[in-house]
Image (cartoon, rainbow, N blue to C red; front, top):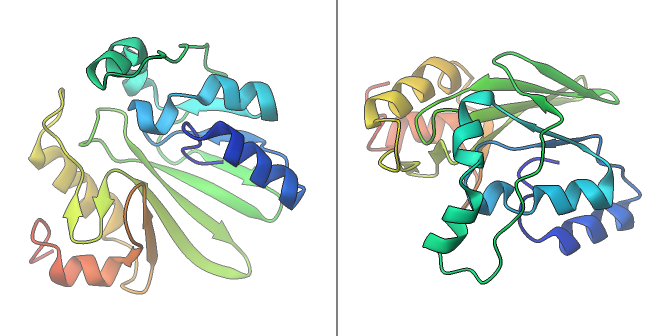
Length: 187
């Protein structure tokens, strides 16, 4: 499960419907909309809660993030089950999830590449790369140069046909972003 930190009941119900078990709960970064309910999701699914260590300080601020958003309930900050590192590979049956550290939206932002013998690679970009845009970099600890460098170094190395599923908004491809994204033109 990637970024199942919001809407726990829907996520858990969907897993039950599919007859799937969450082995890993992978979080692309520690903003509340991506990891806020991770403790509850872990309690319901038994999956291992994983995050890049550079986002641990941000994860510790979940109650403050809830306050900024005016949420009545602050999510619990629970212990992680492990760290995600650049080029780590998590295996799930015949498929694998390769972790790419793509700092810029947050210091510990990651993108994940879904790879399997029977399908083309698929990039889950979190809030690093969006269709026609990039993630905000002005929320602390990063810069526009950081996020653009991460995208160029880690994501634009994939073929133009590679699909990208962002954390928000519509899907895109590497080629579309290379040709049309105003932050990446000329890459």
